[in-house]
Length: 221
Image (cartoon, rainbow, N blue to C red; front, side, top):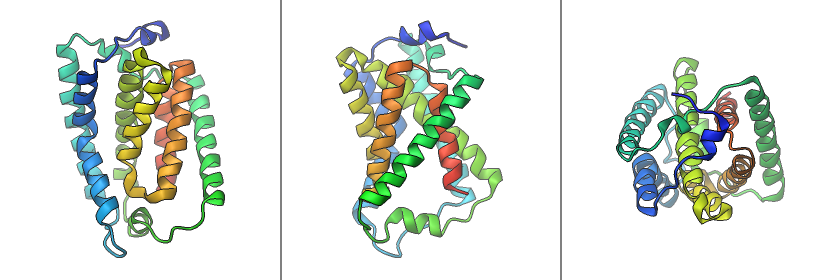
């Protein structure tokens, strides 16, 4: 199940109902949990990431991905267009995207005043994980998010214009990262915008997946 660049550009459009259904399946639980954390968090209330939590995340994303892909297959969606195509060039471009994201994060940190301790700060401070759970979790999560956000949603919304396609995807991405607080949300917004513009121009999915995985792994160093 593979695709060449021309096939990637020919992926079918998504109807609003289909897109909403896939978004709710793939990201609905994460959006609800993130918004709940953002709205109810109090200092000292956040738990850190754990091996058990990462293992649960992998299982959950694999199950949700299977459901979404099953529904798309039933609609005769060409699933091959959602498969990232690994390449050395893609790794180089992914590394450059990763560097650009960290540069943007640095700019955000300098430009935005401190908002004090946030939920994500406490979660990272209390995190105790091993590489045996972190690496699989970050690989699966990077694939999961970019395949369904960029490969499916952004591409599927292009019939409504590039700005709409990128904007809808950004909105979803920010919603399920809202628990990260104001600075984190701005960083996610800029990262998502960079990813959206890159994908709109190149239509290459693998560099985004690679960049996402590397960014997450570095965050847990």
